[in-house]
Amino acid sequence: MNLEQKVNELEQIIKAIDEKVEHLQSIVQRLSICKLEDPRYPYYNWTVSMNISEEKKCLAETVLAILATRLSGQKVSDFKKEIEGIPSEMLYKDDMPNYKDAEIMLMTVLKLNHKGHIPLLLKKIYAEGRFEKICEYLLDEIGEDVFGE
Image (cartoon, rainbow, N blue to C red):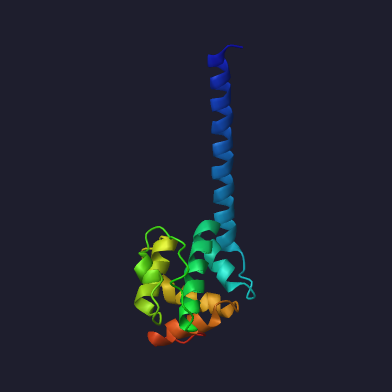
């Protein structure tokens, strides 16, 4: 088998794998739509239904952790993890967090284009028992109840 034949064979294998991955993604998306939500995991249900990758989810949680640290009055200027698309001066301010900045940062890391997703996200995270103080604080700033849909 010459080099050209081997390359063609590998290209066919790659194409077949791509098709299988695409098929599996389609199945997972359809399953996420038709399954019943588990009330114990509203945040994870939301990430699946919104097709949020693990990487984006982790970035959002990093943003929330930094905002929670700021809310507790602890200094965050010592942290310097760069997050693409978010100015460090916005993320690492030493003052109290605010909803507008949080909304911008979460929409950026999650690559969302509709502001209405953020209150729902915060409610889902709160309902799962994660980042409760910062979620409640941010939702309260915009007059939203943590338990409302």
